[in-house]
Image 1 (spheres, rainbow, N blue to C red):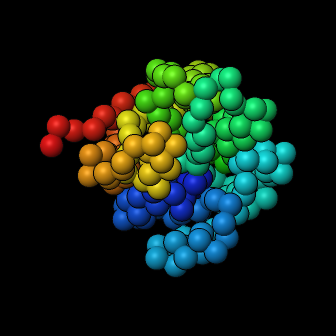
Image 2: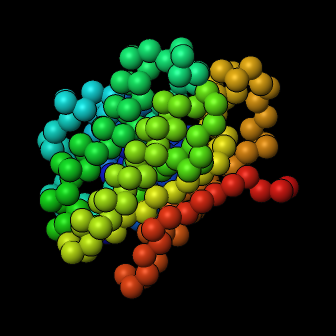
Image 3: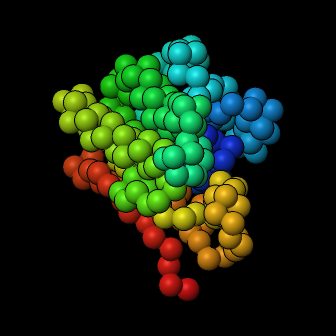
Length: 226
């Protein structure tokens, strides 16, 4: 049985990934900031346990509670605050970079002994904004460009230990975060127009389920034409 740690597990994509991987029989460790929501989710997923942690405060992260052997680490946590560079103060940059980049980097470092022991797999849920930065998206896109660099460096460094690294770049996905983005943009939100979280989870599982001789390093997902 594979042991899988998912950060941002109570978010839209995180929950979909948890449900998908629970269905394949993974033993789940659910990471997030809200213990009550984590326990509620764990109650629906047999054998799951919770690991409260705040990626927004990377200095508080520790190896306590991490399993000694970790087959999969999926980074789903993220925050977004839109606005032009002219209006983005230090707090916006610090929060965005902490949750979206520094926190994942620190947690990955802490988990590396367990990942190496299992010759495991790290998956970073990035964004289309990690490939292209539009106006108003400076802080978020910078954090996601940085996350891509983190994944690329980690992939090269850990290949000798048998650790695989995949980056998934979803386009706009029907989650609470996307609803908040539309509100910040002053646009009406129609979740039916966008990628469903279950489709992103299926892409994550595809990358994880490939045989050992195949390494899916990057996956880009865009809304369909239906």
